Amino acid sequence: MEVRFTTRGINPYFNKEDYIIAQLKSAIALTKYIPAVKEVYYYGAGSTDEYLEGIIIAALQKVFPNVRSITCESDLMAAALATWDGAPAIVSILGTGANTAFFDGKALHYNKPALGYILGDEASGAYFGKQLLRAYFYKELPASILMEFEKKYRISKAIAFDHIYKQPNANVYIASFMPFLIEHQHDPFVASILRRGFASFLDTHILPFKSQTTSFHLVGSVAYFGQKILIEEANKRGINITKTVRRPINGLVDYYQQFNQ
Image (cartoon, rainbow, N blue to C red; front, side, top):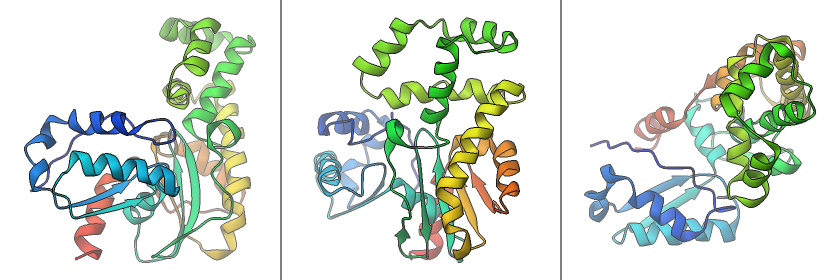
């Protein structure tokens, strides 16, 4: 039997054990199956750090009291398995955050570390959201989109600063402006923001892997909805994007059904 549900995002960098427990227990569709759960496979941000992984495992053990084994892996591993077609590939996530590695079918091999939304995450939703907010507050948005932006968000510097510097999950808030960029990606100003960000991502994270494989798989809403400009920038660099998936869950389920019997 398959049961699917959605919670708010979970990231032990920002969320404590109690928050994770509350999110899982809020999934009504899951409640009646909790006593029967014996194995848990968790994929998410922060799962490559032993301390942060401990927060996740502790929460899962409290939610599922009868569990016998818990596998805790990174969200990038989920992306790798979800897009696995039997051949080694470069795998990237471009969603709220960003990450990249080479997947040989068993393990992820990193060239550059994921530095998070403050220092890195090139071409992520948070990265692009910062560019949009900066352009707005610096009064650089062209008239063609300025009115629509103000009508949609009714934002002020005080409101933005409260979310970014005082509230939790600032990266999620900043990334929440990404849909506006996707919606207006045909506007020359917006297209230039996207083009520069994708170029930086490709130059920094993909070109160093180029000699290792011809396959390049992308997962995440930014990659999926921005793929027209992303593909154009990739083609300029001789990079062939072989697969783009918005959400990895379907591919991950297929992987376990096909390769993990």
